[in-house]
Length: 123
Image (tube, rainbow, N blue to C red):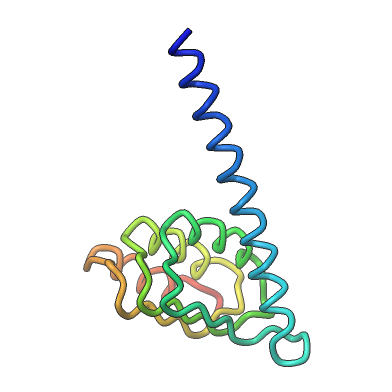
């Protein structure tokens, strides 16, 4: 019984986390579209306590999005995992021209992945 209770509790927590991430994605999207008269442009999220989990959600939003061309993620808690997710976005069709990742926890290997993604991109 205890195991079932723990599994049910974890399932409820995971579901709540998914719903929170979806709300976060929609809020980010609305904010991006309200900037520069609806054309998007710059998405400012510096020092917003963003982790890799939010970055994965943000990467899903940015994939094939050409209206956001600058992304400020300075001073967050992004690690190599989040940088790889952004690398996948940068390698594909996205309008991103500038991504500020200063002050995060990104190592040299992930920086290399980001650089390679930019080289392969269609910019």
